[in-house]
Image (cartoon, rainbow, N blue to C red; front, side, top):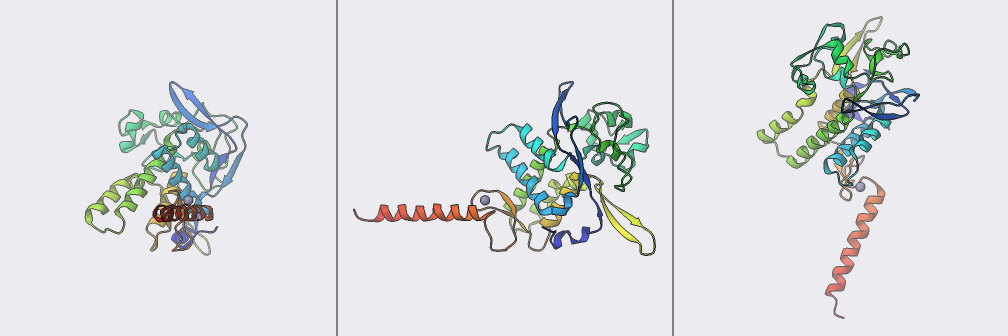
Length: 293
Ligand SMILES: [Zn+2]
């Protein structure tokens, strides 16, 4: 499905991302990471080609983690996210300067706390947090053709890794934000607006999105999404702020879906049918209770 009007302004973009055919969970010094499996195949795709599916997928992963209604192991959600979309790109998403890799020190601001550091961290040490081992000769040299800085050769390599739960927690935060918006409904009180902007701080505090201008006979402007994380956040904000915001909660199963008709209340025809079946059963049982035997 091609994107609706909400994403129309991002038509010119650099958002291509890399995913591998298989991922594994590794443990090192008591920490768990998720990383491409040895020998897995790399592919390039555009997560914003189907922004509706991207956003609803992340919201529903967040919902599963938050409610943990199936009591499933969290590894499973982390694996599902990576298998479908690759890793989120936290290494490039956290630094406050896009060119961080060319400096001795990386400025992380408050994110430095995650690593038990101050606002700054030695760049070499910072990169080591996201790599299983030192450079291999066979890091893919694809950053340049994907119009990205050299550091992306590491992000897109098979030695790149991320703490295994980060993408899942990110999905859960997104879902928490979504439910707070839904709870506030149409209220336009200042307090609910403030609540929303606080929740969204995770998006606005990081650079995420930048602009590139390509000169030539007819200059062109491109939105550059620094990470998968930035792509999810931007599409989510675009949908949420669209005039008739298209993200809905299914009346039957509670799943979040992208609605195509304003009067549609269910994520699928199956859910609509089941809802109707339950409702007619309810009616029949009420009738039976009230009928004289
Ligand atoms: Zn449903």
